[in-house]
Length: 409
Ligand SMILES: [Zn+2]
Image (tube, rainbow, N blue to C red; front, side, top):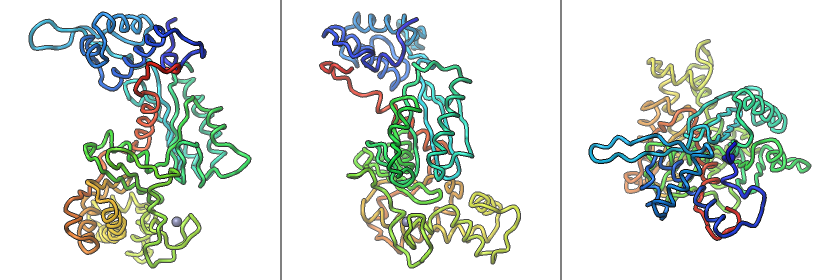
């Protein structure tokens, strides 16, 4: 059996390698990274972008091929001249585990080395509010999934878990849902999930997904507004995710901006997210029909569906919701002057029923000079945005520029 995928990213046994050996391992890691990031490449292109001679690139390719990591795909389709062979890392050479825990449950998606989702599972018995118990259920479910998929442990490249709350990505802390002192979230995760294990706040993971997979990925200053049971924003500033000094940047939902006294889950009254969350949209609809709820309209998603079918009360409730959202957008625009604001989550299904009144209301809240430079759009990434963000966070933590002088390549 050839060298396992994970061993090309980690010093397998901490031995002090010779300079030549370190270099060789560095080339292997670098080549796998290039092929992951760029897709199939020829040996000439690999040599060129890695700064290697052609024979050295071929030699690295040959060892990766004989270890069962890289595949020779045969000649490329070229219009003229000799067609070079293309090389690709095998789809089953490694796997990424992504987990999104929210108030409704947990979505586990396993991605292969070609970023293809090979398994998706939703656990409705593992919501974030059942914090510790949910983690145990998720860890058990994941073990079962990996057994079913017949994936060797050594091929698991790591785990990224996305969750709401005050998340410190670097300390693996969530002060909102895992605050019990005698329990170390970091320790539990590293013991029960494939390492390395990262955690990330949901709005930030969604921002990362928008940056890499969304239609506005070219925006250097992009703000994602993640609306579900609350409101969080993810800030891509100058092309990078901004986390803030403690990792908590973007908690816009817990600013008191309105006159209402609705209790917020943070313990205060009248936070912005008490009027910008999916349940509130449903509440606005109930207000519109004087609480005479119809059996087939029981959630925000039902309200959106009804609006598309011409239900006036549904249309009016989305417009009222849009006015609340406009306040959040105005604040972001005035403070950060972003290029793009992307509205994310189930609300995107509302389309123009949301966007038109939102843009209209913004005119009264922000100056035209500010508004005209910011596009406000709806995300085109499907429901898997949080998991896609987790995939990218994980890949970025594993694939990084190689320091050929380091002992830990
Ligand atoms: Zn609050």
